[in-house]
Length: 187
Image (cartoon, rainbow, N blue to C red):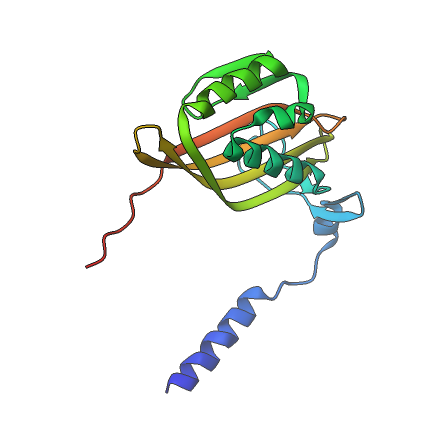
């Protein structure tokens, strides 16, 4: 009986994953950029920014990972050249900062220095390009665990979206965060 259910489930999954042949109308909705075929998203909402993204060169994602690692190591100055002259940041606490690179790094370094340690775990990172805006972005999801100088340990779930200008320097950051769920107690 188990085998019959398994075979039936596989057949159902296979049927769900098969796609009918594209019609001419569907083909007209497919665009090409950088050699990648992208089908336009049909949305019941007005997309206010863009829905035309393709995977991009990983260099911006690698820069973002280097910035996160420098934060963990407590020395953001090593990433100075990865930032544009002016950077706008929308922080997870609701504050907004438009500052020179040096001012931004000094503020973030001061915040980082308030901790004894910071350790990030990266869950996902990717580089994407908005084809209709010709903008390059890197997105990252992770968990940050901070150890305060008092010894208290706190964790935060983070999602950040970074825009990189034509010179490959970060100029805009959106951060979203929430407290990480406390570990489940074993019985």
